[in-house]
Length: 279
Image (cartoon, rainbow, N blue to C red):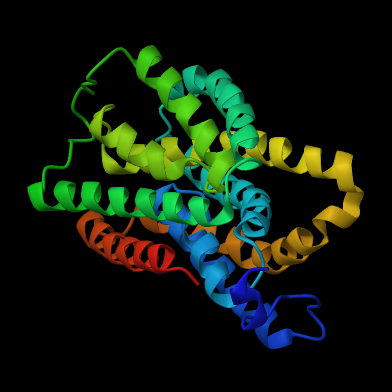
């Protein structure tokens, strides 16, 4: 039994535990804002946050976060479609690869220890923080009107990205956006706003695949009873996450990019530290 489960509360009822439910709802709002602002789907904030609030397994949080990630990305994409900043060639090539990657990730998720997943998740957080710090220090944002230069043909990069996003989204429940945004920036040469819009679209699609690959096996073996905890968490997270996703996507086109990047780096460092230390 996880020692943390004896000291941390586990959400069993929204009515009987209103304070804990409210905290989880606010966490959903924060995850939605983060997902909308940076195209990461929300799981990057929600999963570490849930480990601080509840004593349930991180695998429970991952399954709960996946449909929330779909909602966050979906509300963000609605806004991005209106600004026409999504780079569709990336989406078309990455989509079939993401389906294969989600299947691979779901297999790995059932075989890895929960603590291993926490450490692995922390590594991704730290790597993203380092990468964004480098970009912020250089201060060279691609011109939105300039021709886009990639390090390799888009089909090759997009197929590789889709596969890795699918694996990560099913394995860690984070929608793959933590990989998509740096990939599109570093290898795809996209400006920040196009990066966020395209990443959000990819996160939406890979999160749908990952949700199916994680939820269907549970339904087959345990029925709906096997998803009660996940459904309760998702119900608390969803309202704020959807609202935050839409608001965050709107702010992308209004707030200074450098200030957003600096705040994002701070959040990444804090969350990565928490995941390495444990609950």
